[in-house]
Image (spheres, rainbow, N blue to C red):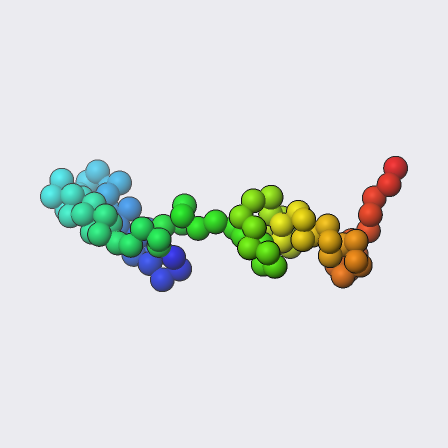
Length: 85
């Protein structure tokens, strides 16, 4: 994804530019369609670093809610304490 990001954005800018000819924009569309699909940012999914779980992740910790709870209750995350009110 990081490798093709600049090329993708350049092609998308060409496609959106109305001042260019239709042929140039169409060629950019074809080149974008030929690029690998896995390089698209929308296909990348945030996963837990410990369990690989694809859902319920905290971006700050890069952990799922389950792994975060286990580590926090074991006292392995500095500064995180169980709240009570």
